Image 1 (tube, rainbow, N blue to C red):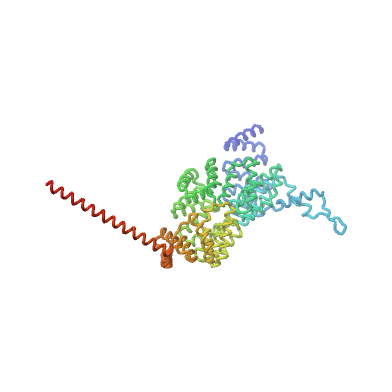
Image 2 (tube, rainbow, N blue to C red):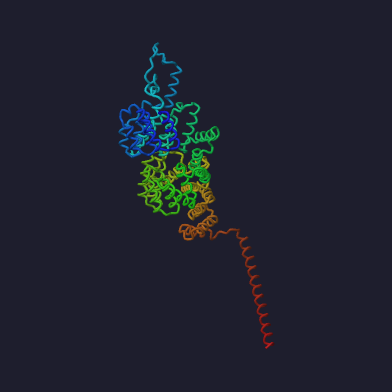
Length: 603
């Protein structure tokens, strides 16, 4: 009978018939009264969403001591019910540090094993007994645990991290997630929490990856595969060569070129280097196969916003609102549409709704802050950016936006502090370097400003950023060169910025000023006329043009004799034209008189 029930249970679970599975598993548990079948019944209730009923089968403390799986499931039930204090009462607030293994420990373990059971060191002619660290590079406690127990301990570290995150104890949550991956490198849920919530800086992410022991992955040939997969989840601002190698290996050796995660990683690289059209092509390719890939949608929405595709945003927002009204990403999409159409109050309302549905949803907080910045409400924008900076401690973007707002308010010292904090987190973002240059420029440190602007442009070139995306930085560099007295370099950068599409009155006026200061008055007059063509009421261009025209009043484009000859020739042609006009007028009068005579004769 037992084998019959187990076969029936398997069939029900394969078809996701949870009610049947619960019915059968209940009879099986009554028949055997074993811990394993009680856990199976609890897991079936959990899969059906019956978290309270699942708890009744795994809440026994003695059972939890015997079975890490039962302990994990009980805590997971509390997490699903948002009873995080109860979950922590089961999990405890300490991680099992003795189970952690790192790449360095694994290498020492292998070295120890290759040297035999003891460690021999010659000192004072005596053999030294192995110390505890040398004897047990991975602790004896870990060696005594089976792999299943280790995986459940890692999973419980992940749950512990979720509970701390709900309590806004982000440092403790980060440590729990890190320990979970150190205990079991295949605990992807914890690794994903670290990456998607930006709990570590780009440098910390790579250092953390280097410490993980992928040698514990079985079979051994899968270790490099898992490491490459994890590499694609890291920040795209540093070690781009390693990142490119991992992507190339996954695409060619493992035939994952069309996998959504690989395509998304490539799209993020393009996005961070401001190559928006090809990035949008990749995200569109992902969504064509999986229209509701919520890992891809935030990036896709940002790209549609940058490309001003408001029609596509409108259609996507309506689709998500119809199909997934309980997803925060849905209302992020609606808010992004309203932001793109400059309907700021509506955008703010929907970004707020998304952040309330998921208080740890980074894009919603950034969008919410952007709405205040768009209306010049710097105080509210600073408050929202500060919340984002507190929630997402590993990304430099909130700190950079805070610095920009302080600069707008004229608080240069505070703005520099925020930008410097962002620079510590990420030193290879061209936009951040541009903002540091702006602070130096406003502090009249034009040499430092020019260096920062040039460094930003060099990084953009290294990243293969389209030149059109660097026009503002190039214009800032031109201003810095002008204020530093390097007029030739300034003129070159102004001309390049104009060529890249910056056709504003202020740019032409600044170019005219450089030409005026260089003594190129006619060229300055042309540039200033272009400025007035863009903005006829521009006061600076109008005033400067008056000075330029006064300066060239006594100058001639041609030589004196050539101009006199040209004037005489033009006057002679004008006299000839007037004579021809008078002759034609007399001829028309004579013909009119003849017609009048003929009419009188007819009468």
